[in-house]
Image (cartoon, rainbow, N blue to C red; front, side, top):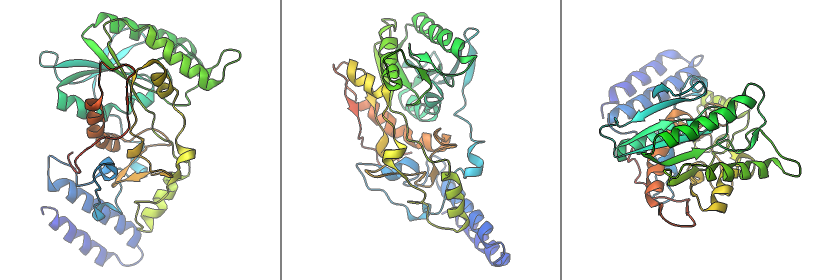
Length: 343
């Protein structure tokens, strides 16, 4: 393997370091080994890397990833979303394009929602590459694609309704966009109407917004919100790294605390909109994990790292392929078959 030289250099560095720097060098060794694994095949991630290690159809274990994490917690906040080309549409709407060029695209789709939609950009980029799609990300932080009254502070209380209107206008002006993917923070700020709970306000807001879509939009696909982690989780991961402990099951968070009911998913089921639920790539029946297959899941408490989101791409692609687009009511895809190490 091309990474053997890197591993030898790492071992020599450990030998020279002595006990005082052992923990720091152990981390350096782990990163060198990860780099070697990534270099082993330029066109693919290591076997079982990221979400592939939690493939519900094919058991996938790579012991070499057990003590590795990419990015590290300290690097995570510097890890941006998948890059794209900005296009100013209006004062309140800037689209971000990626995927196939217009002349070669087999389809044009849109990604719409708040920052919890934006962090799916890296996964959707995998789907776009496989299916030769052109994608417009119309998302903006703190704004739900919804008629619900936002509970965010100014200027978002005025901005979010204008953004919603501009998104609808953009979709009407681009009838080639027949499919939209939408996602949002499950507990996004909202002001419920009298007699409503915040959850009910979110559900009704989604249903009402989808009812106003232009007829050119034929398919709405909700991506279920990801689980949260505790504010102490990153420090826990750092300690495990410092002690050179396996990270496979370290710092896990109880599923009942990490995974919140998603009003967008509930609204989708109520009105027959398609939904994709990839919770099994994050959690088992009891726990949700902050490091999965050597990839750090979140860059903060609830936003995905670009690295982990990309490993979700094959699962998102297969889940999309499993949808029966013309079905009513639409199914929710919760389990997909992805060959281990396919990305």
